[in-house]
Image (cartoon, rainbow, N blue to C red; front, side, top):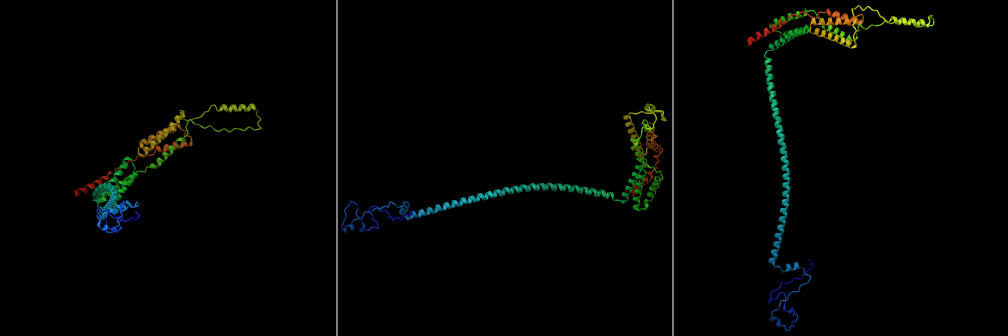
Length: 392
């Protein structure tokens, strides 16, 4: 392409001379005689001579040189069309790639959006369920509040009725304490509470009720005082000392003073031996006045059960004391006293103290005649009935 080629003229058909050649410049062909006549050249047609081809000319350049203007125009147009086609094809490829990338991004965004929408829907469903649950709880709370307000209005519709109901309840508690456990102190506390309720109302119409309650309280105050806590404490001490009481079959031998031998004793060795044998023989037989018709001999197992049965008998007496059952109380104390006198050593300090305590408890009166305090309760009920009749 870099080689410069001489312009070649197009080959004309036979019989036509090249315009660029003149007659004077024609050379005779090889093998033909040279015509030296100058006039002959004007009369004859010149034979076209093919241009000499340089062996180093580019065939593309030769091809382009042989093309006509139309062909060159068509070639240029074709080249432009081909370039535009390639450029359009390249742009279409680029646009397709951009479009594919955009579609991929849109697809990813769409999937993310769908995931977010799904999560939002799930969260919305959960929130809806929670809201429904809260609404149910709120409705239930409203119903309870309405029920409580209704109950409160019913209870607080009349302050007098509420106080009278409390007074009646206190008097019922007082009667139950007297009938079930003979607890005079608890009954007095309940009746005093009922009287305080009526006192705070400060109504003249309640004076009769307060007088009735006061009369019943005076009856309870006039009752003899039974020291139930003191008796209970003495029974506890007896139960704790059962394991330390000595039995009648146990005895303590008197301690004998042993005579120390001295160097000045004139007795011989065989005399000392006789004295020791005599002392041992005297202790083989023991004579003692037991002041009892018979001496019970118990095995260790029987001794254990004797002490446990004595404890159970004292516990039964304690329960009878709390229940104000004087018959059962005295029966249990009598049985325990008989066991202590029969099986235990009453000469011992602990046995003697236990026997005296049981004897003192046996003479205690724990049962008292309880008064009837139902008059005040009946008065309160009658008063409430008279108040309800006008309201109807």
